[in-house]
Image 1 (cartoon, rainbow, N blue to C red):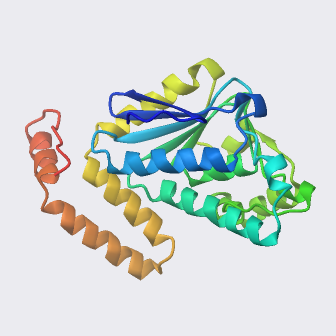
Image 2: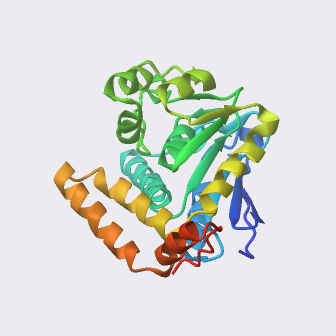
Length: 262
């Protein structure tokens, strides 16, 4: 990825793409320009065979994303507001269905659109000083980037409704208790520890990782029987690949597998 971005810092470390949302003066608030930059990066990551996973984090030590850009939001009429919500929803759906793990390393406030961005990721880690929430009702709004849909699926309807209707944020520890984040780390350890988890995933069969994600996400919208049929079909497709043959052979030969994504 040779392009430079006004609102992002994009760095490669091996097979991992580290994307830092870079508007620290406004706590990395999401505006149209940042969303455009992120959309381009995600599209390129999906096409780049050398990118195995993406980590999203925020610039500075205060926020992952503190929410939408309120100054920009306040200028929108009803039609523009709906278009803005759909634009954000489509981007977050692309992140969710990228076919490669996208991990949110939440390093501070993740509020409103920031939490919605994190919810669209494969899973979330958080620093111990993180605070997460959906405060839109305090502005007379509702979450517009998928928060009312993804949060109940993750933590259950009752817990999600309390967070959405109260608009109050919760601590990283409470988010961990609810299953909203997978791990809580000291701030200095957030990125290194998140990278350790990513490295474990990258050591697995890339086709298996992609198909496991596809089976899980697509299964959300299917009945159990339909989901099981999909799972069996993807299992069967994988059985014919080089990677599966290599993985089984390596296990029997008691050696590390050498996956090729084929």
